Length: 376
Ligand code: SAH
Ligand code: AVI
Image 1 (spheres, rainbow, N blue to C red):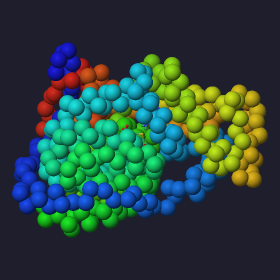
Image 2 (cartoon, protein in one colour; image 1 turned 180 degrees about the vertical axis):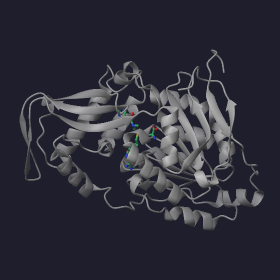
Image 3 (cartoon, rainbow, N blue to C red; image 1 turned 120 degrees about the vertical axis):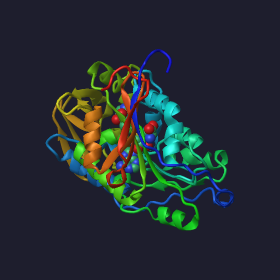
Image 4 (cartoon, rainbow, N blue to C red; image 1 turned 60 degrees about the horizontal axis):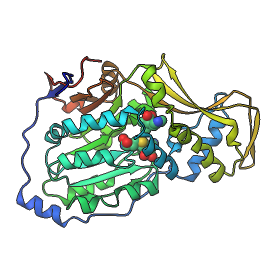
């Protein structure tokens, strides 16, 4: 790399990568490019939004799961966040993916079936799809239905032969993905399942929930899967707080939009002017928290129920856990995964972990690649 910075990564011994045969290429060209999004799991719709908000506001520390930040407006605002200067994670992860997409592609092999968890704009996916050898299908999964549809609309025209199968729902509740069996049955030369989980969205789960999610992915993705997880590893509050409380106020609007959504969809009467966004760093748990803090006492009604807010109390709306390299390795192992590759950006802030199920994992040979100055 230029600028003398060092990326430490290690790469496990790689399997031989056969090139795509003519028959498989012809089959790829015949694939249907698009299918309607399906909503396969319960609790991803209006009913669960309602029950999560009602239950969350009844707790001593009021809290609402961060998944509900993403209505269409929330998804748009998150996209804006990814472009504000202070929010380094997207920039740094993109830098890593640009550098290592080819090596990840080698590990994935030809005809990969890419399943993305929390696909959002699918911007990062394009780097992966561009590098992969004739990817067979792309299954983006997201809770934000309309934004998902808009984000993938042009992909079939950009990637000839790629089957795009968007799925609306809560990826943490997947038991099985019937699409995977159908794709495997339909292809005489099926490729590897590549689960792409970028953006540090894993950090929005508590560590125990993240372990449960990793185990669940291992079950439905199968023993030969490759799992690519982007995770923020920054521990410095001087970088973290501005990233979650930018000067333009985009993150504040993203957070406050949750109350706009609750007022609209759950017929509530939150007085938005009384709330302000706050980002806090919890050093003990190594996480950034987002809160909506109320300046004066307020009685809020919603769906025939009433909630009292004391002046100064908050609604906790998001956790973003930050994992050092050893902490993530431990988390992955608890979830049944081991590293095949690991990539760090030039500022040593963000890590792309390439994982394989432990039973099938090969021993890791250490190789030092240069991008970030220090190991974390
Ligand atoms: N992967 C993109 C977007 C990250 S933002 C990136 O790296 O930039 C997080 C995305 O996950 C949003 O699009 C949000 O709608 C989606 N999301 C959050 N929780 C989810 C859940 N439980 N199930 C499905 N999608 C979820
Ligand atoms: C999607 N997720 C990983 C983002 C994060 O950094 O926790 C959401 C976000 N919240 C505030 N800014 C960005």
